Image 1 (tube, rainbow, N blue to C red):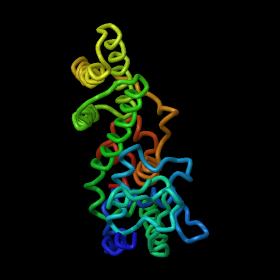
Image 2 (cartoon, rainbow, N blue to C red):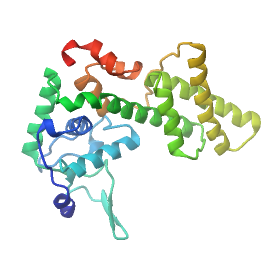
Image 3 (cartoon, one colour):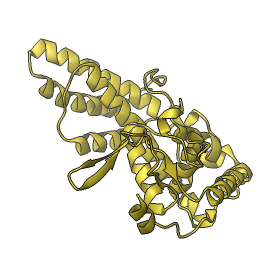
Length: 271
């Protein structure tokens, strides 16, 4: 743990030096992990609001660790850090975290102040759509995997699924993508029973069914109804910070296809 802290040292605690993705990830982490009596950040699992959708959380935690803003504490609960051969591994939701507490507190306050006043660092504007897409893709992939697991379907080619979801997200909101994914899962389950095929074949059929449903909606110009969030997959802190605190659009980030033009209409001061 000490070797990691020596390797990854924070180069700057200035908001102006942070990419938007890192600023959002840090503020979400800070809200999820209050400082305990030992002067450490509590484990993520102690907060009822999830940090981020599924695997996206691991990506963001790696980003925060490599930036030097946080690191795993050697005083984490027993069983949260362990060895696999010569490698030290850990359970991200269970470990405690450390960092420069005073500087991190000031940084969190600065990020919130910039969000409140709309006084963004100039480079954040160019990163809006990329950050929205990353969150939207993570939410859709989480729901896609949930629908697969519910029907005990299997799939090969994780990147191919993400490419398909990126394609759909060009024209549809996350809520609309949920609808398309649900239709694809329903059709795949029907295909499994009617064709008496295996669960892997039906899982692969689901991806094609989703793409066909999206293409048909585009070609025929009909409106796809937004689904609500699934109760089993609650809204994450990353979503709250990005859409409520930074963008100030709330759940429109889920129900609308958000882009630069939509944000410009939302607040003249933002642009």
